[in-house]
Length: 439
Image (tube, rainbow, N blue to C red; front, side, top):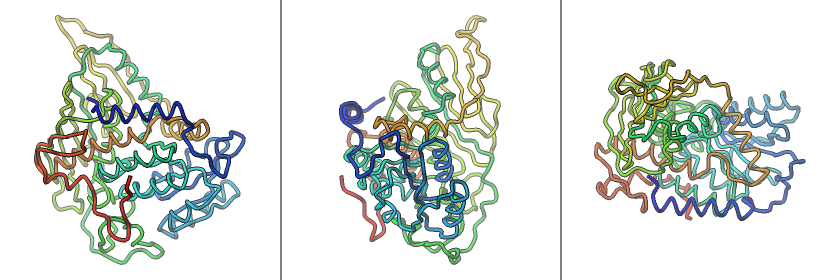
């Protein structure tokens, strides 16, 4: 159910994209197809490196800079690129220094969630196009700021919700949008993952040699170093991320919004907690059920750590989505999709289709789309608005869980009017000297 505010905002963005060049004129000729697109990467450990590696499969691309707070990891990645390409990228500890490179056309942001907002806005203001990992921000307020920054600076921004470019998902949603399943009254999505055991509490320690831990914390609260909060497991602590809901959840929630052509819910309620592993190191819940009311359909999200099951489809432990219609159910995950017909009077209400297996590389399709949009200055498949909407949905689910209240969502004013005390979750407090941008 699209809000008036976001409808108007998105229409304005579409109008601007179709009537004006999306990027500012720059000192280099990034949009000329004969020139290589020169990119840099901020955060070289996990998905950021996967994103960059995928992008560099496209001819006419080059990585000229890497930035990370882990000096040893940074050197190792620079060595890898030099061995692969014969050219060594420049390396940086501070992303702001990297953004001063005039030859840099675009940046990939693969840092923890709490850094995305500052780094994406800095990149847009420096005249760079951006590929930012999901969720785009660690709060709803930051996500809105990022939309404003991208549009004010006329930058191409691709969000790493790559199902938007995957032919496998596109085909399934095309079938959904054909209307064959009839009215969709409910949608379910899940992340019943088979990992999560053994995340034991460990004592604080000194940061590893070569790690600039204060810069890793950035705008997050000052805390002693703990290895559980570092690298991939940062996502289970509220200071930096939102657990499974903002990790796998954002991918699947985005497909719910795409399938239902929706942007924001009317209300949300959540139950769950640390029910499987109450004494482990995580702050975020290992078990969660969240119910969203969109007015003309309901949406249920569920997550289970160390469960490894999944409804409707045969791939256990694979997150997915199911659209439940009056004539049948469309169930889809990254591996397959299928139609489960409803029955009445001994007859199927829709055709029986064989299970469709995925044959495509969605990430490669997504980074290729980013490459093409840098050249043609068109909006990419996953716009910054789409990233904001998915992040908003995920964060509202987490806020409902943390407050243990049913939240009403005023999408026009970005507020929770019925539970005023819940609004403090919408905007983070940055640790000095870091400051939220004003737009």
